[in-house]
Length: 484
Image 1 (tube, rainbow, N blue to C red):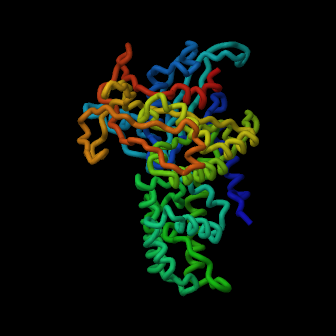
Image 2 (cartoon, rainbow, N blue to C red; image 1 turned 180 degrees about the horizontal axis):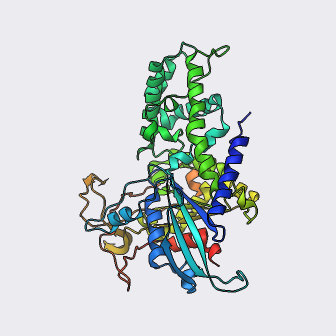
């Protein structure tokens, strides 16, 4: 039987954490927004753009509180939790807007930042209409951590069976070959040694890393800390691998039993505290997905991405929130699945990209709605790195995107230097997304990574304006109802 994801002690800790949040600012509501994304989806960019646009009143025509003239302003507030690193907003903005703009470092650990938003409410608040405030806590964490949450409901035997099955699939054959060879040569009933555990863990980790590279772009790769070990690197809790069960009873001194104990330790030391202390205290969640990267890698990557998103959504504590229940048991009542890097294709394919995203999360979204939560899919670019144009070739007009590929990007045998601007025909997405799943045909995309915009406009107050695609609509969906 699947294991329960939390214990009674966990639930008490979650309730106490929620009560503590309410006690810190009893008269100022707090909305906790979780931001995560699968590999290279642009979490840091999204959060930096979110903070900057709220602080400077960016160009957000789809953000109702701003366009209606009710949004008064935002300030950076005191960091709410002394035990969690602060999101390095200023450093990330400097990287994007300096003399030589570049993308900031990607998320490698949890971080948090609080904004206090002031707005003119349309509601009857405290006997009057007038200005009110909202604390917005933005919680940033690696997507690899999110992929660990399904492990809480799986025993070592169940997880091993799933992991070994994935490694044996035809599309994983090359990446998993060395690891599967180690498994075939290992007797799981043998006497346990650290040398064997370390050897298997190293082979398993190498397989996971190779599966995440661009050519494969696989997503379902738990345990996530194997890819981002941090301070736990080399610890027993990160030194295990899936094993087939031994024939006969499992001896406590066997290799199988040792790895089973380490798997359970991983859940106890790493996964469960993250779920209890951070994830279970969220009100809203945005999941950023580099859908184009999966499409470019082929049908196996697309199918794997669908599995990963379904597994992720099943872990959310979904449901409708109300002021009373939020005091002890928060629920995620809105989830946004955002297909990022919409600026890497022409706007004529944006609706198709959203359709692909909707198709990827269709089954899981139905379950979320049944639980009382809302979900939405959007194609966005939090910071737009390209612009659109039309070029003529042989009397025919072609819709293209114009931008500067990052140094080292390669297309048609040409390697770019990071300084040369090009016009690129990115290709078209299929009109009907089901074709990606039914026919299994790869999508012919000219996929390149682009440098951030090198010349940015400034508004009347002298603040940099960050160009975007549908970021205003995403922001309105995530927090707009709290600003009415």
